[in-house]
Image (cartoon, rainbow, N blue to C red; front, side, top):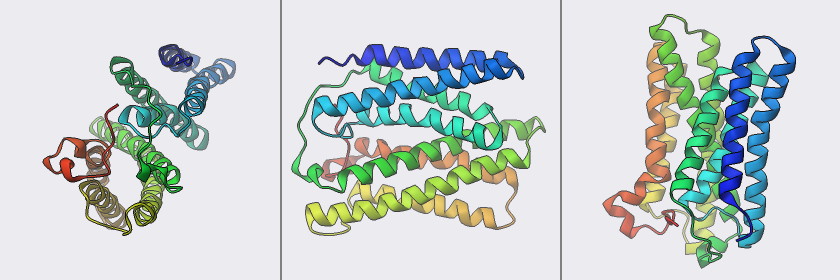
Length: 265
């Protein structure tokens, strides 16, 4: 394979790390801050370019295996942090996001993917790409909301949390929930196209629905008079259910009966 994932991964991690260090050192220096943002953005651009080239080389969308979905996570989650910084002028989230991106790439570096163009018939549906991409964007947003939740819990303990910090996690969760909803709808349409029915209570489908209900519960709780700290705990822990839906279901006893679980390589 001509595309060198190792080089792309290390280069992206180097961009994120150097951009983060420069951003921390900037301290109000607009030139250094802009340079840091450029480096951070450059890391994601490198991964997006790699995904595009990988897609071309595979002659299929790189969405079939867990490792391939981690590439999308790594490319997208730093962008969430940068968008939050642009919208609210808060930089702390982007550092967490880039650390997560580096973590996902590190997993792929330790467990290289098998180059395989094969795509089972069910994955050749036109709903495959929109369903998985929409879900991945939702998962990225909800991962960022969970990180915000943990950060806000720490700030609350230190008596330094603000309503603005809470709002960031809430808006990320709200937007992520919208993407989860579209993902469920697209998944049902895909199931109808591939297997002839919209829903079969497959383990993957069941856990996806549980995750959707968990975040629906959060949105209901946020409209009630629930303590701010409790809502942050909810956000922080809710992502654990998404992890089960994303890849944890692969290790459950019921996974043997599922046609939806990601292939490992």
